[in-house]
Image (cartoon, rainbow, N blue to C red; front, side, top):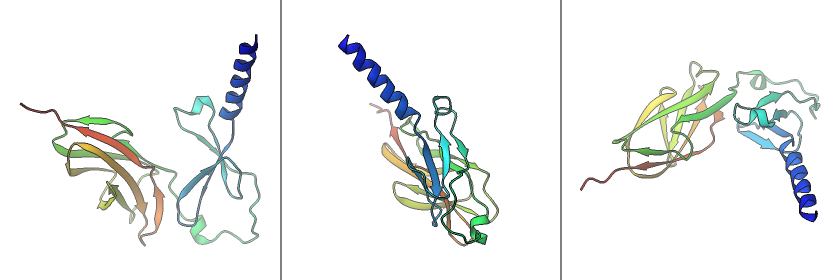
Length: 173
């Protein structure tokens, strides 16, 4: 009987943790932050079981801003909603790519005129022309990829999460 009580208690704790609110906000540099505590100007994100695989729903916060100043022109300017690396997938193992890596980014809304994409491949920055491109000289091993979108002045608009992937090559004897 004691074991059943412990399992019930653990199940209740897990359910409470799964239903916790997550808050999202963007700082002055355009970096997206997530937290479990609300903050002025933050958006609440629904991370219920049904949205964990299909994406989070974002709700505008009802928390009043702590300043009485009107929004500046840069705050009202265009903002990207999301940026992620579609291919290669996180923790994916690629086989026999012959040194050429095909990369696909998912950007919503699409890349705006005058904006640029900067990709960090193993920590080295590279400018690319679109959200679909190739990187040459990618050989076996562990690699890291991250992408950013910059506006026409070079200001960071949005950054993707880091993405680690692996490249394997068959040995020919």
